[in-house]
Image (cartoon, rainbow, N blue to C red; front, side, top):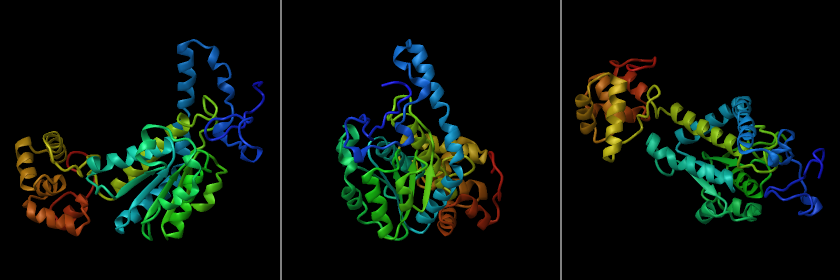
Length: 329
């Protein structure tokens, strides 16, 4: 095959000779990258430089998608604030990235374990060992949406924008009355019609044609990190840039919480430790207590009245700072 011939490849990385003609696709991530035609003839350092040069294009592609990502964040905030849940759906690399993002939210922001859930095609077994073909099961995606309803948000991740498992999930979610977001690397993603918002990160041809665990996977990681973090910030799970949703349930987290309290309040560690103990490990209640000079019982009550948002609780009490950032804000 000459460099001028674009390979029409399947999601699994097969060539045009492998699939039946009706399965041939030419999505951007499966085209050949003109910058890496000779990658297999290069010394190690030059291989790495070519990979790195392509990786450097991903943040710019994500930046171009931020307006649509902002819409997705607003849908996520609306879902969680209204008592709903966020569900990620993906197969292969996208499913693994989604699983990691969802798993890290409770220890980072103190969310309930079922607030953000990840559904990976094939379940836990497919997380560790690739289960080829399962991504083509649209009915499996639909069945994984059982339990979704109005007020929930489904986020489907697929580099090609055409994976049947994700198609089934988005369509099932929409039928259940849930909002739907598609994250893809294909500006012409067929599944965009099944989503309220299409976050398209146009990463283009991969270093190795069709290997979407690379640039497209990096983009999905950046998008989900930004999505979930922005949702948590909007919900008041941070104070300034500090993780005040952390609950001190073990020695390591207790030490982290005391450090956070000291940074946010400017008070010494002994005072912070005492407040944390009085708040029974609730970092936000301890912080409100310290900043507003109230006992932790009142701090807890004010937080409950403000959906757990520290700044709102401080404003409600009337003695804490109303805005700004830094140690005192």
